[in-house]
Each structure stands twice: as structure tokens, then as C-alpha cells.
Length: 298
Image 1 (cartoon, rainbow, N blue to C red):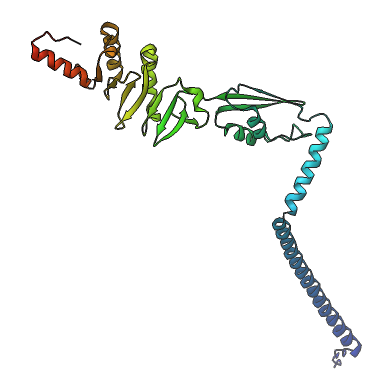
Image 2 (image 1 turned 60 degrees about the horizontal axis):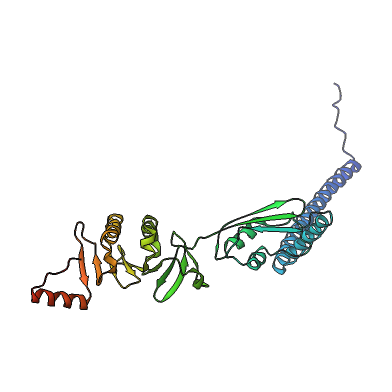
């Protein structure tokens, strides 16, 4: 019989080597975990610090201050290169004070023409009372063209004792310096400014006749009463105002009706004219009628 081969026993040295190698791996894993944790904590602290500093810089105004300083520095360098606002040409203004326009432009000495915020400047200029529209154009290297389009005064509107100068669309222009516009129509009443177009159409149709109108009152939000300088009141209809105005023109052309002793000419009813005489004229006619004398026709 062959003797059985027995497995050799492991030496204590190999066992010690295995234990030592496992311990090193464990220590390395712990070390890596500690390093990873350190970097995570450090990164979190760094992020928090950045957020806090950003909030501080924003709240304190430092960021805006630094931005403005940087912008000013760039502007100065651009201006030194020849792109500095030198000539400002303003045209189109008539009733707008030139100093008001300059104030609205808000330019300063040595300002770079490249840095101008044209939309903001335009907004300030168009906010001036007389300015209807404006354009501002840069002309490099150093010129600025400002063109003004003003409102046209169309009437003086009176409401609740207050007076305003308005354009043809009823837009309020100003309440100052109205004495210079005595030749424009004087309109009275709530909503009169919004219905000015219909009144201006009468003026355009017969300007000589309209020049004798002292004031126009917007009545009941629907029609006009015209007060003439000689004291006669014309009541115009709500509709077909132009035809009634033409009829009055024919009366005046053929009969000089506005020179007669009349207080009111009522044209509100189509095809019918109603006259209200002065008390003196009414009494005179009554006496003529009682005496049997022939009554005058108007």
C-alpha cells in the first residue's frame, strides 16, 4: 500500500502576512473615506461662504459701485479717444424752453457719446409738456441731433374753473401761459376736449363765422351750444351738426340774423328754427301787434 500524502500545514508566517494585508486595506479605506468627507465638508463650507459674500456684496452696493467705476473708466477712455459729446443740435422746438430740453438730456462735460442711454433720454424729452414726439440720433464721433415735434394748440378747455390748453385730439398740453393763445376756441364742460374734433370741423367749414364765437359749451355729453361775442346763443343739434351750421351761415349771409335783437337761435330740430327774442324786442313786437301795425319779419 502506498502511503497517503498529507497536506502540509500552513505556516504561521503566511497567516500573519494575510492578516497584515487585510489590515492595511481597511486602514486605506478609512483614510479615503476621511479624505472624501473632508473635501465634501470643505466644498459645502466654500459654497456657503460664496453665497454669503455674494449677498453681502449685493446688499452693500459694492457690486453696483464696482460696475459703475468700471463703466466710468471705460467711458473716460472712449472719450479720450475722441468719442466725447461735443455738439448738441436741437431743432423743432417753438414753445418748449431750450433749457428744459437740455435738462432732460442730462448730459455732462466729458461724457462719452457711446455710453448714452438714448431710450431713457428720449423718454425724459417726450415727457416735457409741449413735446408730442422726439428723435435723438448719435452722429459719431461727437455730435447729437435732437428733433422735436410739438403739440399744436387747438383750444382752451375749461372745466370746474380750471383752464387747460389742449390739442385737436383733446390732449392736455399745459395750464401755463394761456394768455398767448387767446385766438383759439374756448370750450367748456366735461368731455368738451374729447369732442373737439366736431367743433373744429365747423371752424374749418366757415372760419369767418366761427371767429365770432366766444365760447362753445358741451351740453349733456352730446351736443354744442355756441355763445357769440354779441350775446346770441346758438343751440346746435346732436346729429347733422354740419347742416345746422350751414343753415346759420345762410341766415347770416342773406338776412344778417346775428345783427338782430335775438337771444337764442335754436337749430336742434331738423327743418325748424326757433328764435328767442330779447325782452325789449319782444315787448316792441307786442306793442306793434296791439296797435295793428305791420310786424317786421326777422
